[in-house]
Amino acid sequence: MSRPGTQTRQSPGDDATDGPGQREDSDILGDADVASRVVKGGIQRAGGFVALNLITAGAAVLLLRYLGVDRYGRYGTVMALLAIVQGVTDAGLSLTGSRELSVRRTDAERREVLSHLIGLRIILSAVGLVLAVGFAAAAGYSRVMVEGTAVAGTGILVLSIQSSVLLPLTVELQNWRLALNDFLRQVVLVACFVAFVLAHGSLLSIFLAQLIAGLAMLVLTPALVGRHRLVRPRWTRSEMRALTGRTLPLAISGALIAMYFRVIVILISLLDHSARQIGYYVTSERIIELFLNLPTILIAVVMPVITISARDNHARLGYVTLRMTQMMAVVGVLLAVVLHTGARPILLVLGGHQYLGAGTVLEIQCFALITVFITSAWMTTLIGMRRTRLLITTTAVGVIAVLGCGFALIPPFGANGGAYAAVAADVIFCIAMYGALVRAGLRSQLAAGPLLRIAAAAIPAFALGALSPLPAIVNCLLATALYLLLVVVLRGLPPELESRLRGLVRRPA
Image 1 (cartoon, rainbow, N blue to C red):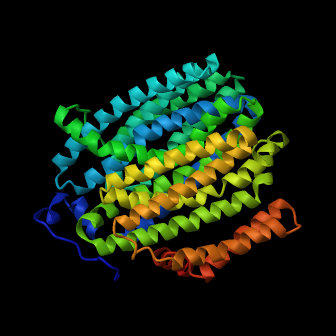
Image 2: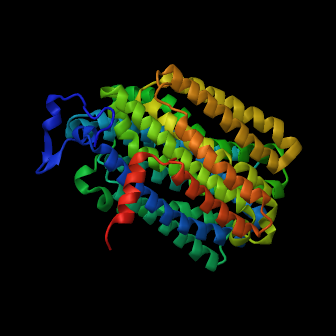
Image 3: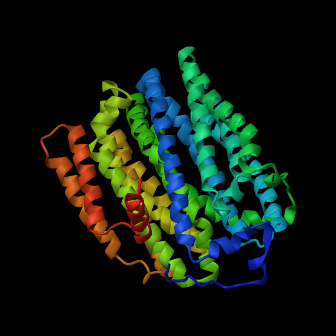
């Protein structure tokens, strides 16, 4: 396969082995056929994501119908608060860990870094949990919401620590193990939901499911990652200071993408005290959230390759960034088409008629998925290039945008205003992120052609959904099929993915 940047810098460590028949990770990440591995890994993680979301959707149906609009709004508010805390303490460390482990040459160096990453995760997650509980109490949330923050937050703390232990699997491109971990975690969580609902449990018991799932996955971790990869947490002062300095801007910037919708949940709970409006927005946000983990999963697959490319070969970095942007745009637009045209039937299936008031919110909010996916790709490149100053600048723009739009639009428009604020803020953040890439010297590599072809495929699909007199479910299916057909015909897919799909189609039975 001939692609830009297929030749990488060699060093004495490139030919070392960790064991019989096993190459150094840096050699694996620098191979000429790494694009094939990334595509395969992305398909594995995406397959796991689909299975995961089928289970998650089942859990959503269960909770939506059991809790009702008002109680589900309280549940969603607490989980949004915890998601913000987790984003700040998790996103930066995961990306930093993936980058730092990718550039380490020996197993001893990687174990040293990993032990301190786990140590830092424990500290940050514990501090974040305390702050979340304090905020819930100070904001005047009900007792069950404050207690739920503490209980569910402890479970998320445990899962955050476990995610650090799994970081070597990301660098080694062991994506099927990561997909299995995600799947098992959700299975345990949903099993707890089912048990508590059947037992007519309280809202606090629903929060308790998060803690049970976290502890269960911690017990399963040695089998998933292998006992030889386990390390003890360490807190050496010099190493912790260095990791904190490298992580902080990434934590702020990486968390922002996951924060947009959740920050607005908190703003609605403070600016519009209507339980119904909070419930409508949280319902829409929960459906959007089903897909928010997908860009994180996909960029985790490509992050080690981006890191090595940024270090060794600028041409390959530009090529990978372009194809990653193209793939993210394809998926983001696809999800927007499905949710915009199918909002009503989706809400009827998940929650019933009582949730139809969230339909307009979902029809608006789904457009933010497009920019969320694209900015995920661009942020990954900046992280791989270690352009932390640019990340801080764009993050500041995003924070001002989401808060400004939220304060301006939520009081007069309620949940719909929150949806408009989410879309507007993310468009502003996307523009700022593109400017950061230009300043980083990647303007010439970000060709507009692929994105224009994707847009050309999307416009007829949205028009069909808006103008067709057919039932909403039929419009959703037709619009989705039309978009997929056009994106293939107009060659909107990245060449590597298109080639792999053609190979699967042509493979003999």
